[in-house]
Image (cartoon, rainbow, N blue to C red; front, side, top):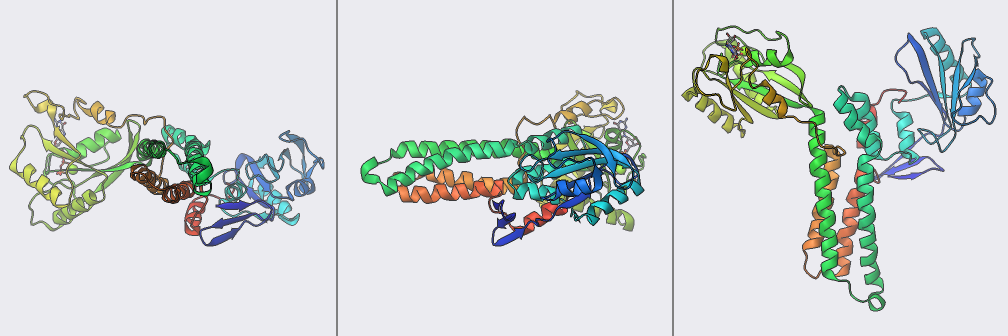
Length: 448
Ligand SMILES: Nc1nc2c(ncn2[C@@H]2O[C@H](COP(=O)(O)OP(=O)(O)OP(=O)(O)O)[C@@H](O)[C@H]2O)c(=O)[nH]1
Ligand SMILES: [Mg+2]
């Protein structure tokens, strides 16, 4: 993305998005009534409009110093000015705090519009921050992730990229890549003066960059997967104990449990936090041959649940042992191109044999801790989402290619290094397809 501050223009792949230079206004806090509400103005007229709706508001206010005063419609409150260049959007901003009743908020928004502000669209403050180079695309994505975070762990992970974790890692690597590119390009233009490049050195440096990038992707993807939550299908024969395990992990009797095989007919989903991961557990109908219409439909749904699951946990009844029917079911799962990610022997409390690593019991709680241990707190790395990994991976591949060509001529190396640089630029937002920006900003709420 190329941003041009003077014209507030974002140039993306083949598109130019004009970030309107009007001053925008929006309620940033929750739907009234709330105890306190905050209305934000951003744009070149923010100070002028603030002065029209709030007194006293000096013509040259001290940055980030709260002013106590009165709104034009009578309420009193606080105005907090942020100067151009040192605010969230990079523009003049004034945050106006007032009592959060519907009438006060409507009166203030109305007064701001009457003084020349335009109601902001969803995500427009963040879009302006992006256009003005205050944040890059990875940080804009992390703003959405911060708003969408549901657990403390998700919030911590979103915070890493919002504060520039991935941006710094990629920019640092890009700096080294560009230094290498500059040396290679210099050899193309001034080969006689500078002499030949040591081909081993270039390939070592390109290879090293590729390895570091691969590590950023590997660690970051693991963090991202832990954050996004995984769908886990609980499958097995009727009566294996699937619904009982779901209830034990959810912490209450969500699913019907009976000793009648074929109790669960429809799939049922519950979201839980297990270890550091968010999991969507899908309880399914036990699979067996049946002529019964409802049960057959339930079993068809079990197969669909397995197809859509990130993980399949296969449960069998330890008191019955591993049966030919279990074997047949694992065969049927293989026909979907899948294998169980976890095999669990249930009802361990009733089983007299030696305890195994796969044994669980919902009565004694045996083995449930081991399930949580599958999802440890991810390493301290910036998360890498699917879009970011789709751009970083080709950069790593091209760098590896550059490192492997023996005695590569400088012009070929330069082409490859430039290609890697272009991919890194896509991650940071140098070139973003407009539909991606639209998709991202459609997830923002008004006021962010
Ligand atoms: N003692 C003991 N009984 C269990 C355990 N887990 C399940 N059961 C019993 O096994 C029976 C079947 O349990 P469910 O959870 O309904 O089994 P299911 O796999 O959901 O069965 P379907 O819905 O019919 O496919 C019930 O009587 C449960 O109380 C366990 O860990 N220990
Ligand atoms: Mg069940």
